[in-house]
Image (cartoon, rainbow, N blue to C red; front, side, top):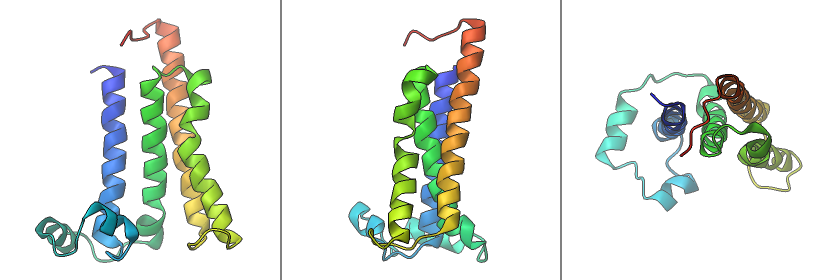
Length: 150
């Protein structure tokens, strides 16, 4: 399997898993659900919510999706730019940085929301993991001279 395709699949899975955690465990009153048309009365939402473990740690519900989404975006940008790390890292860090800044602004009550250290940690972890992924594959590609032309 080509590296880019694998990375796009990994990115999509990270995005989907983060979304499923939200759908399964978060309150349906969140703005995200009303703007996307996802409703608690949807049959598939009820099936998901009825078939997941009831008790999970708070960080899993409230922070892990942030890290997964940061990782998803970062790796997607890496693949989009053919893992050319010096050029893509500033763009790949946009979403993790926005997450960090929004969390800090919540701490100072400048932005609505609830500041949480675990959110901050997950944005950093997701962004750093994505950058490490890009750097590792960038070095493998350079070492083997296999930059893809597409």
